Length: 200
Image (cartoon, rainbow, N blue to C red; front, side, top):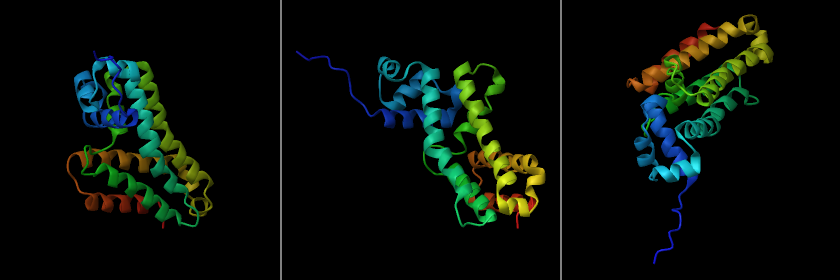
């Protein structure tokens, strides 16, 4: 007779699969069936391994931040690279991901953060989305306030406004990428915003 052992699966692969469901459909639009079908596990297995939908979402969001978002942010601080090139490398790295021909387009975080206004996102999920929202703005502001080249250009005098301009652009490119606008088209907009804030 079969021993009834629990089915084994790759938890990281399952989280990646769930991430792409949330990336495509948002928190609200992703059903448990969507998630378990994509992860190729049963609902009981999902609950045992990851908890409920909110807990799964928090785990996939943290995985997105760790495996996707932080790599883009590190480009802002590459030693020996001029500020303009660092900003371009950072923003185009994000746009490249947004325009990817893989399972999802746009930005996981931007899509899910747009759902916060609905008022139905559970508290723990809301908290990680708000923290992720604040992270880029804080890093951009710190960069403009502390980077010697940024200070020399006077970008520290309007650090918050400059940061908001970059972040607004990247949220916009996420939406445009989901609509099918190409990477090369969006690159022109990136160049204009970098020049527009006074980075020469």
